[in-house]
Amino acid sequence: MKMMGIGDEGANSIDGQIQATQELGWKHIEPRGVEVSGYAKANFHDLPDAAFDVAVRKLEGAGVAVYCFGSTIMNWSKKIGDPFDITLAEVKRAIPRMTRLGTKYIRIMSFKPGDEEFKIPTEVFRRVKDVTNMFLDAGLQPVHENCMNYGGMSWQHALELLDKCPGLKWVFDTANPIFNPDRSRPKPWPKQDPWEFWEHVRDHVVHIHVKDATWNAAKNDADYNWPGEGQGRVRDILKDAFTRGYDAGISIEPHMVVVFHDAQSKASSDEAMRRNYVEYGQRLEKTISELKRELTTSAKSALAAAPR
Figure 1 (cartoon, rainbow, N blue to C red):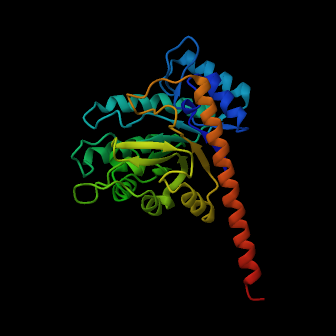
Figure 2: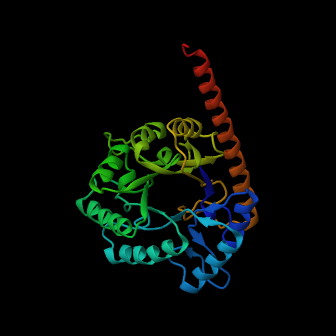
């Protein structure tokens, strides 16, 4: 199992992201937005070549490996009506950068649906399949996240997307179902159930994003919590994953100090982000240790009770 975090949750700058990673004793990171001195903050695959080179040198010098690119490819800021050339350019920039870093995984999405949409358009399947094949042909693995996109409209939509795009895998986010409507049901759409979503996609999951939240009806938005303290069923999902032999990546995405997709979310200092990120990671590590002890104890008890 490899522990990491989405870098820009811990700091804006590459130096701060490395510092937060090292403070936790982790050897991997999932970069998303990255600020390099002298250059504007941008997604890791969109940084100018010179800025990317600086970031790579810093990561390599610190012994921090890039496990997954937290890309913006087909994410919630993109619509299916946008020119496909935008997506293709992002993919073509990402592939050589992933190859250079020895990174296997890249997070992708499937565009933002309209407010009233409840079916996945044929064009979405075509584009996601094309992108999936581009990465697979390069020996890389795209992973789709259940977020504010067509594939994240419900677990049924997720399975339909996976079926239409062979080779695509899933990165499961524990908290996203809490604030996403279940568009597979009649209106008014209820919010999704994290456990129900997990149960149906878990066979396709090769990466996990851990964040936790509680739906706040009064403000019609989610409040973000420490892992295991919200409605994301974090403990249950991780315990089930470990029971099933999950031993891949787990990436923290606290959202407690700054929310990447919230235009109203104000920029925070690297120090405030770092403190929250490090504590979040430490709390999650404690939870994981507890879960593994529980599973070990259960296994020993079952063995002792077995007929001889």
